[in-house]
Length: 171
Image 1 (tube, rainbow, N blue to C red):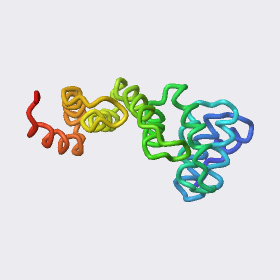
Image 2 (spheres, rainbow, N blue to C red):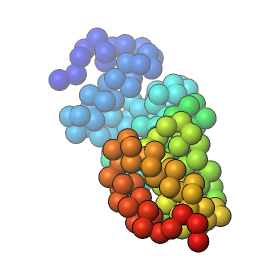
Image 3 (tube, helix red, strand yellow):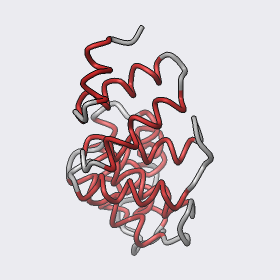
């Protein structure tokens, strides 16, 4: 049930209300309306709306999938300080979603997010370092990032670390 005060406030241009209304609409399955309010907030320059708008374009909920627009909004979100946006951009460069596959760029984004404490980015960076994908292979650094991610409860990092520990540190 939508809060009438929030609706009125959103209609009057309050970006916080727009995003709050968008979340309510999303939770109720009204994806097109959720997209609409998220889009309005983002177009008004409201940084907290940048990442969710990118996710709409990535998922296709309420609109058609548009990888280029997705990455545009993820970049804006990353510039505004969103660690998750860095991770999503890294994944998109790694997978070639809306951009040319670029492992080096993916690694740079994973590294930025890892430096800010994101466990998934630490895991992905560790894997890239282990395999030499987008970066020179470095088992020692791979161990470090996988250990940090594993210590935060990332089960995938823990699994990768077990495999890496079986390989001698210096070979």
